[in-house]
Length: 50
Image (cartoon, rainbow, N blue to C red; front, top):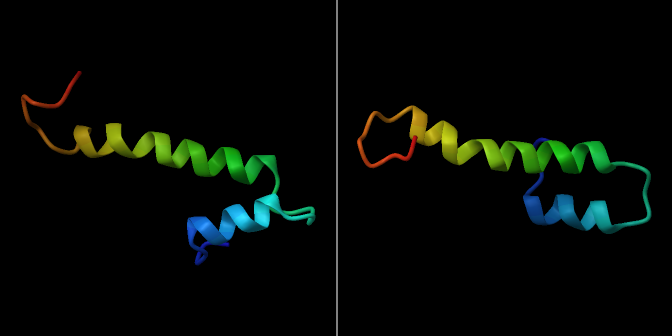
Protein backbone atom coordinates (compact mmCIF):
# COMPACT_ATOMS: atom_id res chain seq x y z
CA UNK A 1 0.00 0.00 0.00
CA UNK A 2 2.90 2.32 0.70
CA UNK A 3 4.13 2.18 -2.90
CA UNK A 4 0.73 2.77 -4.51
CA UNK A 5 -0.24 6.00 -6.18
CA UNK A 6 -3.23 7.85 -4.75
CA UNK A 7 -5.20 6.96 -7.90
CA UNK A 8 -4.49 3.25 -7.38
CA UNK A 9 -5.46 3.55 -3.73
CA UNK A 10 -8.75 5.24 -4.59
CA UNK A 11 -9.55 2.57 -7.17
CA UNK A 12 -9.01 -0.16 -4.56
CA UNK A 13 -11.02 1.85 -2.02
CA UNK A 14 -13.95 1.98 -4.45
CA UNK A 15 -13.71 -1.75 -5.19
CA UNK A 16 -15.56 -4.59 -3.51
CA UNK A 17 -12.64 -5.73 -1.36
CA UNK A 18 -12.50 -5.59 2.44
CA UNK A 19 -9.25 -3.61 2.55
CA UNK A 20 -8.39 -0.77 2.40
CA UNK A 21 -11.23 0.47 4.52
CA UNK A 22 -12.37 3.63 6.23
CA UNK A 23 -9.37 3.79 8.55
CA UNK A 24 -6.91 3.79 5.66
CA UNK A 25 -8.94 6.47 3.92
CA UNK A 26 -8.98 8.59 7.08
CA UNK A 27 -5.22 8.19 7.46
CA UNK A 28 -4.64 9.35 3.87
CA UNK A 29 -6.81 12.44 4.40
CA UNK A 30 -5.16 13.23 7.73
CA UNK A 31 -1.72 13.04 6.13
CA UNK A 32 -2.82 15.30 3.30
CA UNK A 33 -4.35 17.79 5.73
CA UNK A 34 -1.21 17.90 7.88
CA UNK A 35 1.17 18.60 5.01
CA UNK A 36 0.54 22.33 4.34
CA UNK A 37 0.81 23.44 8.00
CA UNK A 38 3.87 21.24 8.44
CA UNK A 39 5.59 22.74 5.41
CA UNK A 40 4.77 26.22 6.63
CA UNK A 41 6.01 25.49 10.15
CA UNK A 42 9.36 24.27 8.88
CA UNK A 43 9.97 27.53 7.07
CA UNK A 44 10.33 30.62 9.16
CA UNK A 45 8.78 33.31 6.99
CA UNK A 46 6.54 36.20 7.81
CA UNK A 47 4.28 35.21 4.87
CA UNK A 48 3.14 32.01 6.58
CA UNK A 49 -0.17 32.37 8.40
CA UNK A 50 -0.11 31.66 12.14
